Image 1 (cartoon, rainbow, N blue to C red):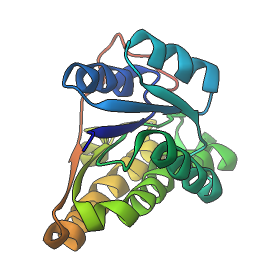
Image 2: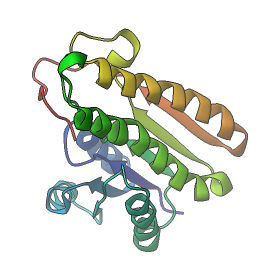
Image 3: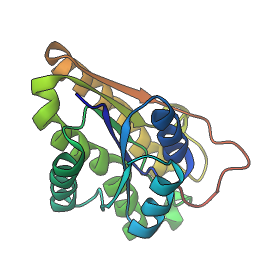
Image 4: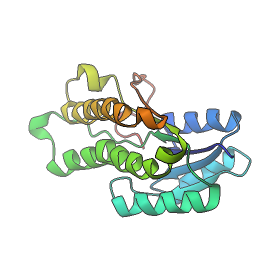
Length: 189
């Protein structure tokens, strides 16, 4: 059986670095991003027979369709990485409601939807999920209350899901990296 890994947010940042490592370890990869051309470029740089897909993780229909396409072209996904995320730094009193909703939908709901879609096959065959959180989800930060809430929610979601599916041989973990000063300050996809 092929080792198939879907990396949502795999065209940039942490997701791209994870994709590079997983390719070295022999996984067949689905690089998933909103922008298909960017995802294709990232998949092409990995060499091999990795594929690119476009998906808005905040839309359940997109997520379902993407999983159907991945399984059709690569086989069952047995490793899922949720690295798609956005950050709209702002003090809460200045935060635009649409920016708050976008962060909630992408950073939290998106990971919930991809995990839900992955469970359809992982519950039967086992698998692993890694959700990319942030240390900000634990400690908070000035100007990042909404981002912190989404990442804190992702931490709680991941811990609970891990308990739900452990008996089915599905592992769920969350990592909480620290953003380096050289990271892009306004948005990570």
